[in-house]
Amino acid sequence: MAFVLPANEAATAFEDPERLYGLIAETIPVMVWTANAAGGVDFVNQRVVEYTGLDSAALTSWAWKTIVHPDDLERCVATWTRALQTGERCENEMRLRRADATAAWIELTARALDSMTDTAAADIARAEALAERALATAPRSSPAR
Image 1 (cartoon, rainbow, N blue to C red):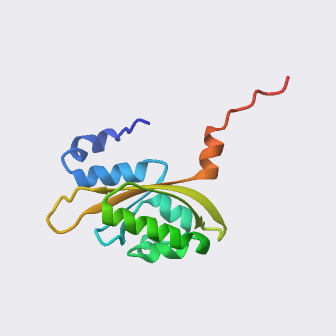
Image 2: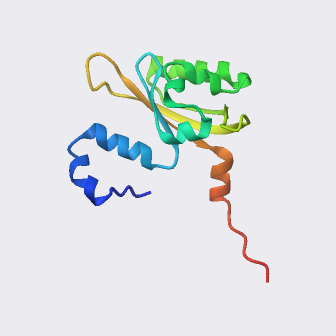
Image 3: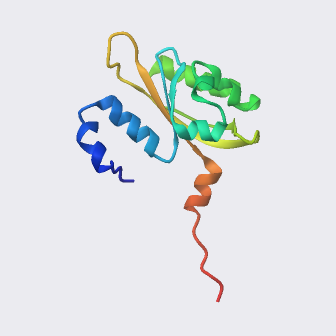
């Protein structure tokens, strides 16, 4: 996947890493969020807001647990906590509550980032709806003749 910045933003985006990250996070077609060293979510992109129907403030800190299916929550929290403690990659499949109140399976991948400051490390996660990915990658059938 190529990332193309609008010409009017390209010149300044690379001078400001935070701005560049924001542009990338809002442009890619998957859900993205970041978390602080304690594991609480501190950023979600627009895809997360659209998928869940909740605004970003409703998903901060550990409030994200409210959108995880109850049968998946304990495993999800244990995997996330282990990743925070060890710095290992976190991979999980879980059901998330969608904006229409149904639950759908997503695949989550998260990795701890090296600390940019002495005070906290950050994590970045991306999630992709499995059914939507399956539809997007399914072989297309030929039209009937």
